[in-house]
Length: 218
Image 1 (spheres, one colour):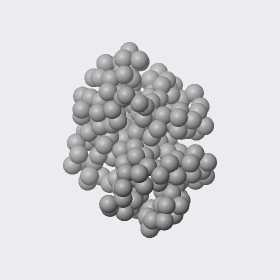
Image 2 (spheres, rainbow, N blue to C red; image 1 turned 45 degrees about the horizontal axis):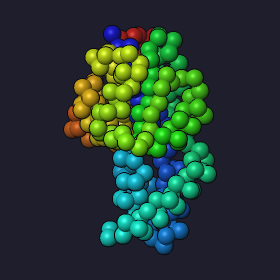
Image 3 (cartoon, rainbow, N blue to C red; image 1 turned 135 degrees about the horizontal axis):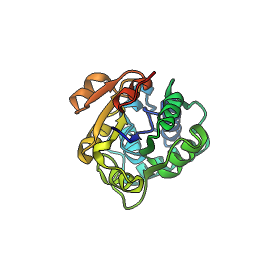
Image 4 (cartoon, rainbow, N blue to C red; image 1 turned 135 degrees about the vertical axis):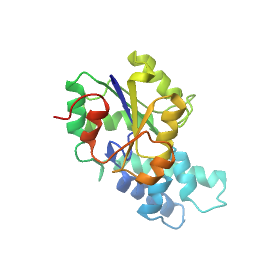
């Protein structure tokens, strides 16, 4: 039976797309670059803010100008990261149900760690046993390093853990770490892509995860 569930954050627990899009466009405007649509930003998200801005700026942008734009993004996002961000419907109830059943909960995200920890505190106080974001010296997802660290910290075997995410990066992360990959359809990618990238299960509602842990949703 599953005793641990590890979640991605953006597109899985929290709908952060509007705030991310606003921050991207504030940075692009500050640097004199064309703006991006919400749908474009949707497909840039998942590999950390450095990659996000590299995708958002015009092709051929110098590393120096890219760094300036990245810093503009971080400055804006730090002030506006909770303007429009909300938990997906049913997520808070799911976390409560999992905790009641004694399941350990964790978050691993490619968002920088300060933001991950703050968002967990603000939106899901007391829900997670541990959370990790992008940190120096640790490869980002889809590298499995952060997964291994979480499993060790929580004293969990990979056979007893699920990894839940909304993107191809998440499916690859789970596979690289040897975990069961659960794709969610309410996030930033669609069902077909998740299946193509190796999802073991697809869920359309948060409550469906309870069944995959071996616990009834009732």
